[in-house]
Image 1 (cartoon, one colour):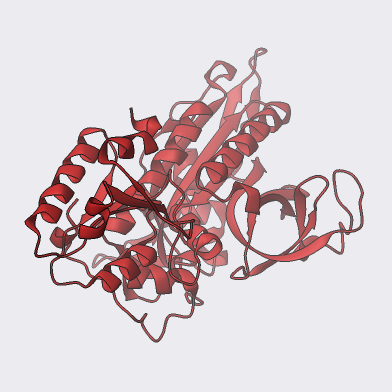
Image 2: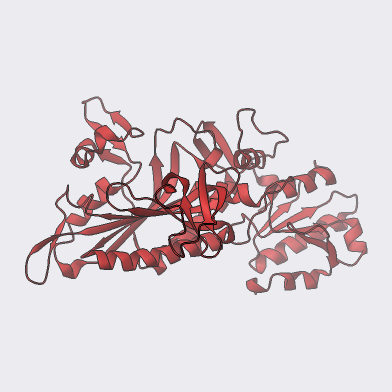
Length: 417
Protein backbone atom coordinates (compact mmCIF):
# COMPACT_ATOMS: atom_id res chain seq x y z
CA UNK A 1 0.00 0.00 0.00
CA UNK A 2 1.21 3.50 -0.83
CA UNK A 3 1.02 5.77 2.19
CA UNK A 4 0.21 8.71 -0.05
CA UNK A 5 -3.03 6.93 -0.99
CA UNK A 6 -4.21 6.54 2.60
CA UNK A 7 -6.99 9.06 3.21
CA UNK A 8 -6.03 9.12 6.89
CA UNK A 9 -3.21 11.14 8.43
CA UNK A 10 -1.18 10.94 11.60
CA UNK A 11 -1.59 13.61 14.28
CA UNK A 12 0.83 15.10 16.76
CA UNK A 13 -1.69 15.24 19.60
CA UNK A 14 -4.46 12.95 20.77
CA UNK A 15 -7.94 14.31 21.52
CA UNK A 16 -8.03 16.04 24.89
CA UNK A 17 -10.78 13.76 26.20
CA UNK A 18 -8.80 10.55 25.62
CA UNK A 19 -6.97 9.41 28.75
CA UNK A 20 -5.88 5.90 27.76
CA UNK A 21 -2.63 5.11 25.98
CA UNK A 22 -4.29 2.74 23.51
CA UNK A 23 -6.73 5.41 22.32
CA UNK A 24 -4.02 8.06 22.18
CA UNK A 25 -1.71 6.04 19.94
CA UNK A 26 -4.42 4.40 17.82
CA UNK A 27 -6.05 7.76 17.07
CA UNK A 28 -2.79 9.65 16.52
CA UNK A 29 -1.48 6.94 14.17
CA UNK A 30 -4.72 6.86 12.15
CA UNK A 31 -5.83 3.36 13.16
CA UNK A 32 -9.20 4.35 14.64
CA UNK A 33 -11.49 7.36 14.77
CA UNK A 34 -13.73 8.14 17.73
CA UNK A 35 -17.37 8.72 16.80
CA UNK A 36 -18.51 9.01 20.42
CA UNK A 37 -17.50 7.59 23.79
CA UNK A 38 -17.06 3.85 23.42
CA UNK A 39 -17.77 3.83 19.66
CA UNK A 40 -14.93 3.77 17.13
CA UNK A 41 -14.45 3.52 13.37
CA UNK A 42 -11.62 1.18 12.38
CA UNK A 43 -9.62 2.94 9.68
CA UNK A 44 -7.50 1.10 7.06
CA UNK A 45 -4.48 0.39 9.28
CA UNK A 46 -6.60 -0.48 12.30
CA UNK A 47 -8.87 -2.73 10.28
CA UNK A 48 -5.88 -4.69 9.01
CA UNK A 49 -4.82 -5.37 12.61
CA UNK A 50 -8.37 -6.26 13.62
CA UNK A 51 -8.72 -8.70 10.71
CA UNK A 52 -5.44 -10.40 11.58
CA UNK A 53 -6.60 -10.86 15.16
CA UNK A 54 -9.88 -12.20 13.77
CA UNK A 55 -8.03 -14.69 11.58
CA UNK A 56 -5.92 -15.94 14.49
CA UNK A 57 -9.02 -16.46 16.60
CA UNK A 58 -10.84 -18.18 13.73
CA UNK A 59 -7.93 -20.55 13.12
CA UNK A 60 -7.76 -21.51 16.79
CA UNK A 61 -11.53 -21.96 17.11
CA UNK A 62 -11.60 -24.10 13.97
CA UNK A 63 -8.72 -26.17 15.35
CA UNK A 64 -10.88 -26.72 18.45
CA UNK A 65 -13.65 -28.05 16.13
CA UNK A 66 -15.74 -24.90 16.38
CA UNK A 67 -18.27 -24.28 13.59
CA UNK A 68 -18.71 -20.65 12.60
CA UNK A 69 -22.09 -18.99 12.11
CA UNK A 70 -23.39 -15.41 12.22
CA UNK A 71 -26.37 -14.60 14.42
CA UNK A 72 -28.54 -11.45 14.42
CA UNK A 73 -27.79 -8.45 16.60
CA UNK A 74 -31.49 -7.68 17.02
CA UNK A 75 -33.06 -10.03 19.57
CA UNK A 76 -36.77 -10.47 20.40
CA UNK A 77 -37.74 -9.25 23.85
CA UNK A 78 -39.47 -12.58 24.50
CA UNK A 79 -36.20 -14.51 24.39
CA UNK A 80 -34.68 -12.25 27.03
CA UNK A 81 -37.80 -12.52 29.16
CA UNK A 82 -37.48 -16.31 29.01
CA UNK A 83 -34.11 -16.15 30.77
CA UNK A 84 -35.18 -13.30 33.06
CA UNK A 85 -32.47 -10.97 31.79
CA UNK A 86 -34.76 -8.41 30.13
CA UNK A 87 -35.29 -6.81 33.53
CA UNK A 88 -32.10 -7.80 35.36
CA UNK A 89 -29.36 -6.90 32.85
CA UNK A 90 -28.71 -3.22 33.48
CA UNK A 91 -26.44 -2.61 30.46
CA UNK A 92 -28.89 -4.01 27.90
CA UNK A 93 -29.81 -1.69 25.02
CA UNK A 94 -33.57 -1.88 24.40
CA UNK A 95 -35.13 -0.54 21.21
CA UNK A 96 -38.71 -0.23 20.02
CA UNK A 97 -40.16 0.19 16.54
CA UNK A 98 -43.23 2.25 15.65
CA UNK A 99 -45.52 -0.73 16.18
CA UNK A 100 -44.37 -0.97 19.79
CA UNK A 101 -42.42 -4.18 19.23
CA UNK A 102 -39.42 -4.32 21.58
CA UNK A 103 -36.02 -5.85 20.91
CA UNK A 104 -32.61 -6.00 22.53
CA UNK A 105 -29.32 -5.13 20.82
CA UNK A 106 -27.34 -8.24 21.65
CA UNK A 107 -24.59 -7.90 24.26
CA UNK A 108 -24.21 -11.70 24.21
CA UNK A 109 -26.04 -14.49 22.40
CA UNK A 110 -27.25 -17.19 24.79
CA UNK A 111 -30.83 -16.04 24.16
CA UNK A 112 -30.38 -16.67 20.44
CA UNK A 113 -28.03 -19.64 20.22
CA UNK A 114 -30.02 -21.88 22.59
CA UNK A 115 -33.29 -21.64 20.63
CA UNK A 116 -31.20 -22.18 17.50
CA UNK A 117 -29.60 -25.34 18.90
CA UNK A 118 -33.02 -26.59 19.97
CA UNK A 119 -34.02 -26.83 16.29
CA UNK A 120 -31.17 -29.24 15.54
CA UNK A 121 -30.34 -31.08 18.78
CA UNK A 122 -32.72 -33.84 19.89
CA UNK A 123 -30.58 -36.92 20.56
CA UNK A 124 -27.33 -37.77 22.31
CA UNK A 125 -26.08 -38.56 18.81
CA UNK A 126 -26.34 -34.84 17.97
CA UNK A 127 -23.90 -33.86 20.73
CA UNK A 128 -21.41 -32.40 21.41
CA UNK A 129 -21.77 -29.25 19.29
CA UNK A 130 -19.44 -26.21 19.28
CA UNK A 131 -20.86 -23.06 17.66
CA UNK A 132 -19.09 -19.70 17.42
CA UNK A 133 -19.37 -16.32 15.75
CA UNK A 134 -17.35 -13.12 15.40
CA UNK A 135 -19.79 -10.24 15.52
CA UNK A 136 -20.75 -6.80 16.82
CA UNK A 137 -22.05 -6.56 20.38
CA UNK A 138 -23.73 -3.68 22.20
CA UNK A 139 -23.61 -2.78 25.88
CA UNK A 140 -24.83 0.37 27.63
CA UNK A 141 -21.39 1.11 29.02
CA UNK A 142 -21.44 4.25 31.18
CA UNK A 143 -17.69 4.16 31.88
CA UNK A 144 -16.41 4.16 28.29
CA UNK A 145 -13.16 5.97 29.08
CA UNK A 146 -10.59 3.31 28.26
CA UNK A 147 -10.36 3.62 24.49
CA UNK A 148 -11.06 0.37 22.65
CA UNK A 149 -10.73 -1.60 25.90
CA UNK A 150 -14.27 -0.75 26.97
CA UNK A 151 -16.81 -0.07 24.24
CA UNK A 152 -20.53 0.44 23.82
CA UNK A 153 -20.28 -1.22 20.43
CA UNK A 154 -17.54 -3.78 19.99
CA UNK A 155 -16.58 -6.93 18.09
CA UNK A 156 -16.47 -10.18 19.99
CA UNK A 157 -15.87 -13.85 19.37
CA UNK A 158 -18.31 -15.93 21.37
CA UNK A 159 -18.35 -19.73 21.24
CA UNK A 160 -21.05 -21.89 22.83
CA UNK A 161 -20.54 -25.58 23.51
CA UNK A 162 -23.34 -28.12 24.04
CA UNK A 163 -22.75 -31.44 25.83
CA UNK A 164 -24.52 -34.51 27.17
CA UNK A 165 -22.82 -34.32 30.58
CA UNK A 166 -20.52 -32.27 32.77
CA UNK A 167 -17.56 -34.58 32.20
CA UNK A 168 -17.67 -33.87 28.47
CA UNK A 169 -18.01 -30.14 29.19
CA UNK A 170 -14.90 -30.22 31.39
CA UNK A 171 -12.91 -31.98 28.66
CA UNK A 172 -13.82 -29.31 26.13
CA UNK A 173 -13.19 -26.60 28.71
CA UNK A 174 -9.56 -27.74 28.78
CA UNK A 175 -9.42 -27.66 24.99
CA UNK A 176 -10.57 -24.05 25.04
CA UNK A 177 -8.01 -23.10 27.67
CA UNK A 178 -5.31 -24.25 25.28
CA UNK A 179 -6.96 -22.48 22.32
CA UNK A 180 -7.04 -19.22 24.26
CA UNK A 181 -3.42 -19.57 25.30
CA UNK A 182 -2.54 -20.01 21.62
CA UNK A 183 -4.49 -16.89 20.63
CA UNK A 184 -2.75 -14.67 23.18
CA UNK A 185 0.67 -16.12 22.39
CA UNK A 186 0.21 -15.47 18.67
CA UNK A 187 -1.05 -11.94 19.40
CA UNK A 188 2.21 -11.22 21.23
CA UNK A 189 1.05 -11.07 24.86
CA UNK A 190 1.21 -14.72 25.89
CA UNK A 191 3.99 -14.12 28.40
CA UNK A 192 1.94 -11.33 30.02
CA UNK A 193 -1.33 -13.27 30.23
CA UNK A 194 -2.47 -15.51 33.07
CA UNK A 195 -5.30 -17.97 33.47
CA UNK A 196 -7.20 -16.40 36.36
CA UNK A 197 -9.72 -17.91 38.76
CA UNK A 198 -12.79 -15.71 39.10
CA UNK A 199 -16.21 -15.98 40.65
CA UNK A 200 -18.49 -18.36 38.77
CA UNK A 201 -21.70 -16.68 39.91
CA UNK A 202 -24.80 -18.78 40.41
CA UNK A 203 -23.89 -21.71 38.18
CA UNK A 204 -20.31 -22.62 39.10
CA UNK A 205 -17.86 -22.05 41.95
CA UNK A 206 -15.29 -20.64 39.54
CA UNK A 207 -15.18 -19.24 36.07
CA UNK A 208 -11.89 -18.44 34.41
CA UNK A 209 -10.59 -15.22 32.93
CA UNK A 210 -7.47 -14.59 30.93
CA UNK A 211 -5.86 -11.50 32.44
CA UNK A 212 -2.97 -9.58 30.85
CA UNK A 213 -0.77 -7.67 33.30
CA UNK A 214 -0.89 -3.94 32.55
CA UNK A 215 -1.02 -0.69 34.51
CA UNK A 216 -4.05 0.17 32.36
CA UNK A 217 -5.99 -2.73 33.87
CA UNK A 218 -9.18 -2.23 35.82
CA UNK A 219 -8.83 -5.58 37.63
CA UNK A 220 -6.38 -6.65 40.33
CA UNK A 221 -5.08 -10.19 40.23
CA UNK A 222 -2.84 -12.23 42.55
CA UNK A 223 -0.30 -14.28 40.58
CA UNK A 224 1.39 -17.55 41.46
CA UNK A 225 4.68 -17.42 39.53
CA UNK A 226 5.29 -21.12 40.17
CA UNK A 227 2.07 -22.23 38.43
CA UNK A 228 1.54 -19.22 36.11
CA UNK A 229 -2.06 -18.87 37.24
CA UNK A 230 -3.79 -16.09 39.14
CA UNK A 231 -6.77 -15.33 41.34
CA UNK A 232 -8.98 -12.31 40.78
CA UNK A 233 -9.01 -10.04 43.84
CA UNK A 234 -12.85 -10.17 43.88
CA UNK A 235 -12.62 -13.75 45.21
CA UNK A 236 -9.29 -13.52 47.08
CA UNK A 237 -11.04 -13.69 50.48
CA UNK A 238 -12.40 -17.12 49.53
CA UNK A 239 -9.24 -18.27 47.77
CA UNK A 240 -6.20 -16.55 49.30
CA UNK A 241 -3.72 -19.22 48.17
CA UNK A 242 -2.84 -20.64 44.76
CA UNK A 243 -5.63 -23.03 43.70
CA UNK A 244 -3.05 -25.31 42.05
CA UNK A 245 -0.12 -25.59 44.49
CA UNK A 246 -1.38 -23.89 47.65
CA UNK A 247 1.37 -21.24 47.69
CA UNK A 248 0.49 -18.13 49.68
CA UNK A 249 3.17 -15.77 48.30
CA UNK A 250 1.02 -14.46 45.47
CA UNK A 251 2.14 -11.37 43.54
CA UNK A 252 -0.37 -8.53 43.18
CA UNK A 253 -0.74 -6.84 39.76
CA UNK A 254 -3.19 -4.74 37.79
CA UNK A 255 -4.49 -6.51 34.69
CA UNK A 256 -6.80 -6.31 31.68
CA UNK A 257 -9.30 -9.10 31.10
CA UNK A 258 -8.74 -10.26 27.51
CA UNK A 259 -10.94 -13.37 27.54
CA UNK A 260 -13.23 -15.48 29.69
CA UNK A 261 -14.64 -18.98 29.80
CA UNK A 262 -17.68 -20.20 31.77
CA UNK A 263 -19.29 -23.50 32.63
CA UNK A 264 -22.90 -22.47 32.00
CA UNK A 265 -24.18 -25.99 32.71
CA UNK A 266 -28.03 -25.75 32.47
CA UNK A 267 -28.42 -22.02 33.24
CA UNK A 268 -29.70 -21.25 29.72
CA UNK A 269 -30.73 -24.67 28.42
CA UNK A 270 -33.37 -25.13 31.15
CA UNK A 271 -35.36 -21.92 30.46
CA UNK A 272 -35.67 -22.87 26.78
CA UNK A 273 -36.21 -26.57 27.58
CA UNK A 274 -33.21 -27.58 25.49
CA UNK A 275 -33.02 -31.33 26.06
CA UNK A 276 -31.81 -34.47 24.33
CA UNK A 277 -32.85 -38.11 24.53
CA UNK A 278 -30.21 -40.40 26.00
CA UNK A 279 -29.56 -43.98 24.90
CA UNK A 280 -32.46 -45.20 27.03
CA UNK A 281 -34.85 -42.66 25.48
CA UNK A 282 -34.99 -40.42 28.56
CA UNK A 283 -35.02 -36.63 28.25
CA UNK A 284 -31.94 -34.93 29.72
CA UNK A 285 -30.94 -31.28 29.95
CA UNK A 286 -28.18 -30.18 27.57
CA UNK A 287 -25.06 -28.97 29.41
CA UNK A 288 -23.42 -25.78 28.11
CA UNK A 289 -20.24 -23.74 28.21
CA UNK A 290 -19.41 -20.32 26.73
CA UNK A 291 -16.12 -18.70 25.75
CA UNK A 292 -15.56 -15.05 24.79
CA UNK A 293 -12.78 -12.82 23.43
CA UNK A 294 -13.17 -9.14 22.53
CA UNK A 295 -11.18 -8.37 19.38
CA UNK A 296 -10.86 -4.62 19.91
CA UNK A 297 -10.05 -5.18 23.57
CA UNK A 298 -7.25 -7.56 22.59
CA UNK A 299 -5.94 -5.02 20.08
CA UNK A 300 -5.98 -2.26 22.70
CA UNK A 301 -4.28 -4.51 25.25
CA UNK A 302 -1.41 -5.19 22.84
CA UNK A 303 -0.96 -1.43 22.48
CA UNK A 304 -1.04 -0.87 26.24
CA UNK A 305 1.54 -3.57 26.93
CA UNK A 306 3.95 -3.41 24.00
CA UNK A 307 4.12 0.28 23.02
CA UNK A 308 6.94 2.61 24.05
CA UNK A 309 7.27 6.38 24.36
CA UNK A 310 7.47 6.80 20.58
CA UNK A 311 4.41 4.80 19.63
CA UNK A 312 3.12 1.30 19.02
CA UNK A 313 5.20 -1.87 18.61
CA UNK A 314 3.16 -4.48 16.76
CA UNK A 315 3.99 -8.20 16.96
CA UNK A 316 4.60 -9.54 13.47
CA UNK A 317 1.51 -11.77 13.29
CA UNK A 318 -0.97 -8.95 13.89
CA UNK A 319 0.94 -5.96 12.48
CA UNK A 320 -0.87 -4.07 9.70
CA UNK A 321 2.21 -4.58 7.49
CA UNK A 322 5.51 -6.35 7.98
CA UNK A 323 7.67 -3.62 6.40
CA UNK A 324 7.45 0.15 6.47
CA UNK A 325 9.42 1.30 3.42
CA UNK A 326 10.55 4.90 3.78
CA UNK A 327 11.62 6.85 0.75
CA UNK A 328 13.48 10.02 1.72
CA UNK A 329 12.84 12.96 -0.61
CA UNK A 330 15.79 13.72 -2.83
CA UNK A 331 16.66 15.61 -5.96
CA UNK A 332 18.21 12.37 -7.16
CA UNK A 333 15.56 10.52 -9.17
CA UNK A 334 17.48 7.30 -8.49
CA UNK A 335 16.18 7.25 -4.87
CA UNK A 336 12.53 7.27 -5.95
CA UNK A 337 13.20 4.74 -8.70
CA UNK A 338 15.05 2.38 -6.35
CA UNK A 339 12.36 2.70 -3.66
CA UNK A 340 9.72 1.71 -6.20
CA UNK A 341 11.82 -1.30 -7.24
CA UNK A 342 12.18 -2.42 -3.61
CA UNK A 343 8.46 -1.97 -3.05
CA UNK A 344 7.61 -4.13 -6.07
CA UNK A 345 10.17 -6.76 -5.03
CA UNK A 346 8.73 -7.01 -1.50
CA UNK A 347 5.17 -7.25 -2.77
CA UNK A 348 6.11 -9.92 -5.29
CA UNK A 349 7.71 -11.94 -2.48
CA UNK A 350 4.52 -11.68 -0.44
CA UNK A 351 6.00 -9.30 2.17
CA UNK A 352 3.23 -6.91 3.19
CA UNK A 353 4.65 -3.42 2.78
CA UNK A 354 3.50 0.11 3.50
CA UNK A 355 5.50 2.43 1.22
CA UNK A 356 5.89 5.95 2.58
CA UNK A 357 6.16 7.68 -0.78
CA UNK A 358 4.94 11.04 0.52
CA UNK A 359 6.87 13.98 -0.95
CA UNK A 360 5.58 16.66 1.43
CA UNK A 361 7.11 15.20 4.60
CA UNK A 362 10.59 15.70 6.03
CA UNK A 363 12.84 12.82 7.03
CA UNK A 364 12.17 13.60 10.69
CA UNK A 365 8.40 13.51 10.16
CA UNK A 366 8.62 10.18 8.34
CA UNK A 367 10.78 8.64 11.09
CA UNK A 368 8.38 9.87 13.77
CA UNK A 369 5.35 8.52 11.90
CA UNK A 370 7.08 5.17 11.39
CA UNK A 371 7.80 4.83 15.11
CA UNK A 372 4.24 5.87 15.96
CA UNK A 373 2.65 3.37 13.54
CA UNK A 374 4.90 0.62 14.87
CA UNK A 375 5.36 -1.74 11.90
CA UNK A 376 7.95 -4.47 12.77
CA UNK A 377 10.59 -3.59 10.13
CA UNK A 378 11.64 -0.21 8.74
CA UNK A 379 13.46 -0.19 5.42
CA UNK A 380 14.97 3.13 4.33
CA UNK A 381 15.96 4.14 0.81
CA UNK A 382 17.99 7.34 0.65
CA UNK A 383 21.01 8.92 -1.06
CA UNK A 384 23.07 7.81 1.91
CA UNK A 385 21.91 4.19 1.87
CA UNK A 386 22.40 3.81 -1.88
CA UNK A 387 25.93 5.24 -1.67
CA UNK A 388 26.62 2.74 1.14
CA UNK A 389 25.53 -0.11 -1.09
CA UNK A 390 21.84 -0.73 -0.58
CA UNK A 391 19.07 0.02 1.92
CA UNK A 392 18.98 0.66 5.64
CA UNK A 393 16.98 -1.82 7.74
CA UNK A 394 15.96 -1.63 11.38
CA UNK A 395 13.53 -3.54 13.56
CA UNK A 396 11.05 -1.44 15.51
CA UNK A 397 12.30 -3.11 18.70
CA UNK A 398 15.96 -2.32 17.96
CA UNK A 399 17.91 0.91 18.35
CA UNK A 400 20.46 0.57 15.58
CA UNK A 401 20.02 0.12 11.84
CA UNK A 402 22.30 -1.56 9.33
CA UNK A 403 22.94 -1.42 5.60
CA UNK A 404 22.17 -4.47 3.47
CA UNK A 405 22.20 -4.91 -0.27
CA UNK A 406 18.86 -5.05 -2.01
CA UNK A 407 19.43 -8.73 -2.79
CA UNK A 408 20.28 -9.44 0.84
CA UNK A 409 17.13 -7.63 1.97
CA UNK A 410 14.94 -10.53 0.94
CA UNK A 411 16.82 -12.92 3.23
CA UNK A 412 15.50 -10.93 6.20
CA UNK A 413 12.05 -12.43 5.60
CA UNK A 414 12.66 -16.18 5.08
CA UNK A 415 9.11 -17.17 6.06
CA UNK A 416 7.81 -15.41 2.96
CA UNK A 417 9.91 -17.49 0.54
